[in-house]
Length: 420
Image 1 (tube, one colour):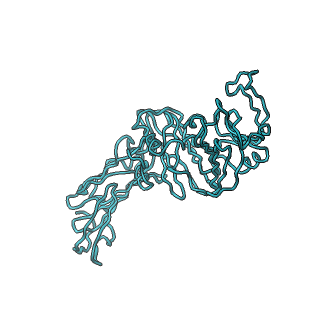
Image 2 (cartoon, rainbow, N blue to C red):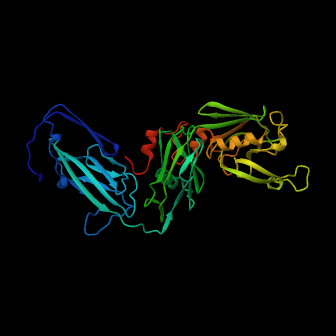
Image 3 (spheres, rainbow, N blue to C red):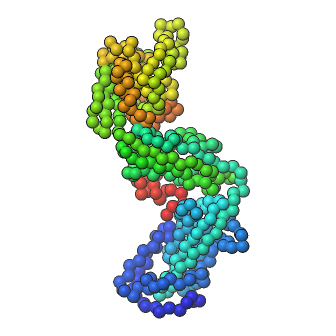
C-alpha cells in the first residue's frame, strides 16, 4: 500500500453494497475506521477515461472504475455532469469494478467521486474529472413542450413534440427517460406516445388543485440512436387552479358545474340532436373565444340544406378543434332543459354562457354523459386523453412495466435518465 500510514483500529463492521454504488455501514465502535480522514485512493483505482492533456472521452463508451490494489475495494462511485445529472451504474459484489449503465452525454464535463476501503476498513477517496467529446453525427432531436408556462385546469395534459420521428422502442425509452415532469404535490403519471413525433403526459387521476408542475428535458447531448443526439428544449412551469369540472347529462339536458368537488351551479342546456349527437366522455377546455361565426359547412352540412346555418355566436368555450363548443344559444332557450336540438355543441342562455365563460379556464374539464354520440377521440381533436383508462395509457409508454398501475413516483425516479 502506498497511501499515507495511519493508525488502524480493527473493529467488527459490515458493509452493504447496493446497485448504483450506494453504500451503508453498520459498526459498533467509537473507533470506527470509517470516521478517519480518508486517504488518497489514487493508487487503488484505475479509470478508463482520459483526465488531462486536452483529451476527451468517447460518450459512446461506458465509464469504468476498477480496483487495482488487492488490499482494497471500491465502496461507492458517484458521477455527475456540470448540470447535476447523475450517471447510473452498477458496483460488483466484491467491490472490484463499477461501470456506468446509462449513456454519457456528449460535449459534457463530468466529476467522478470514488470511495474505497482497505482490508482494515479505513476509507479512501479520489475525485476525478473528465470531458466527453462532441457527437460525430449532426442530427439533433429537439423537443418543444406544451402548453406554455401559465395556470391551467386540472385536466391539462403535458405535450412533448419532437422535430424528428422516433420509431424504435429502445430509442423511445431513451427519449422518454429524459423528459422530466416533477409535480408538487407528487402524483403518479406517465408519458404516452401519440405517434412517432408526439408524447402526452398525464397523471393517473386529474392533477391536484393548486399544484406546481415543472417540465424539462435532460436529453441534450444524450445519444438516442445512430447519428441522432438529444438537442435543447425550453422548460415550462405550470400551476393548476381550482378543480373545475362540468358534467353535462344529455338525457336530462342539464349541466352541473363543480368547484373543488362542490356544486356551484346547475344550468339547463341543449346538446346534439339525433344525427348530430354530442360526443360522450371527457374533454378539456382548449380556448375561450368571445365571438365565433359558426357555419354548417364547417361540419359538412351543405349550404342551402334544411340543416344549414350561419350564426354569430358569443361566449364560446372551445372543446374540440373540429368545432364543438359550450356557447350562448339564445335561439334555443325554449328547448334548453327539455330537448336536444343543437348540431353537437352544448347551448345555453346568454347569461349562463357568459357565467360559464368567465368561470372556466383552459385545461378545465367538461364531461358529457348519456349522449347517443360516440366517445370523444383520445387524440387528434383536442385532449381526449382522459378517455383512456390507466392500463391502456400506460401501454403507450416505452417504459411500461406491464402492470395496470404502472410505476410509483419512487419507481419513476429510478427510471429517469442518468439518475441513481
